[in-house]
Length: 116
Image: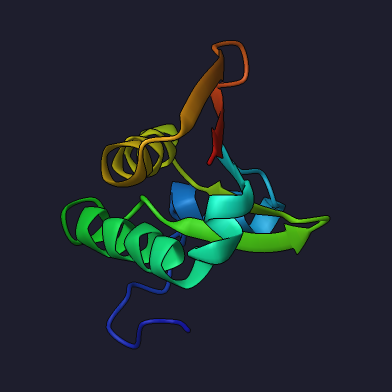
């Protein structure tokens, strides 16, 4: 929505996080799976969202873009690799399990797999 106080000649821009969301171009992918995850899904997802809210207060560009459930796996995408890493580490700290990181420096992309 245009700002009524903005200069008519001013250019509007989209923030980097909104741009990633608009283009469906996540920086972080977190895959959650396993029997323990399915048995405690609600509690685990609560931890994920709490971590995002905590990070977003300090860094508003760090956001969860989407969550998708498919074939017994939940995929969470984020606008920031550091948010994805923080969520993965929070899950591992709280619930242990297996945590794998796959970083692609050419695309500034982080894939995390957490299984338990």
